Length: 312
Ligand SMILES: NC(=O)c1ccc[n+]([C@@H]2O[C@H](COP(=O)([O-])OP(=O)(O)OC[C@H]3O[C@@H](n4cnc5c(N)ncnc54)[C@H](OP(=O)(O)O)[C@@H]3O)[C@@H](O)[C@H]2O)c1
Figure 1: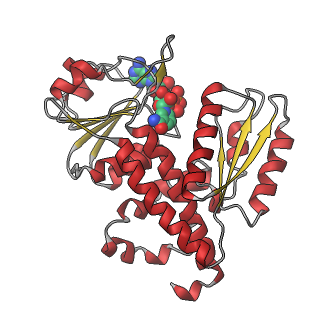
Figure 2: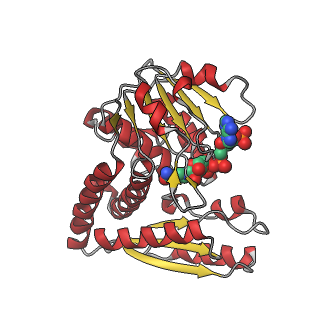
């Protein structure tokens, strides 16, 4: 039976560390602030909005709530984003997705200034990840690599997107070696699949990216040492589709009619083949919020460094 990659436990450890760093910032008079912008009342977004606010309270990050009606114009949203960009109390901005269909979401996301883009989805953040200018965040636990890249610290103001960053943290925490391994990522969205593939590549895995048009999906999954799936299709991955001894990361979330939450993976059959597996819920989800808070505190720290760059 596979070892369970417990996201709740790791998230607790990350939050404890965040709380300590917030306390240090408080001691020099800095209050860490995260803005949350919710348009309408999509139930999944409301749930994430409220859960993030609760978690902010626990780590003493001040949450600034911005709620706009479903009928809001793109201009009104942009005004809210611009005022958050200019607000010195706020170090990060999370925009809850999806935005209503009459709003150009990319236009809004790209309006977030890169130094506050703690969700890492703006074009600058995405570009810096692709250009390996922010992947040093992945090596934070290796002092040598951080030292090598320290020249980036005050010039780069972008962050890694929270869900794929959380997946990497979970793999690192459980000492899953990536170098030279075959990793298959199912899903190619801007928020999850694509950045995750880039991060795995940065760690020198050989990466296959699969999607709806991939023919013979099983061919890729059966050869994957690490299989990460983010489709939202419950039961897509069955035991016969995975390699014996592989590591399975289930990012997908599907809510059944009875309200129960499942991932993309048929846990029962896949856990018999895998060596490690994330549960849903309780796997990647809790780590995602923890990474958002970690990015926010990092943004506040960089802001302070920027005020006195000679400290680096
Ligand atoms: N745990 C967390 O913290 C967390 C955070 C974010 C998202 N999620 C969950 O992760 C899932 C993906 O989120 P997302 O934002 O990336 O969604 P998305 O934008 O809808 O992307 C889904 C991806 O899955 C691919 N796909 C769908 N059906 C497939 C199939 N049958 N075979 C192969 N590929 C298939 C799609 O391929 P095409 O591009 O070809 O259409 C697309 O690339 C959702 O369930 C979401 O709720 C979880």
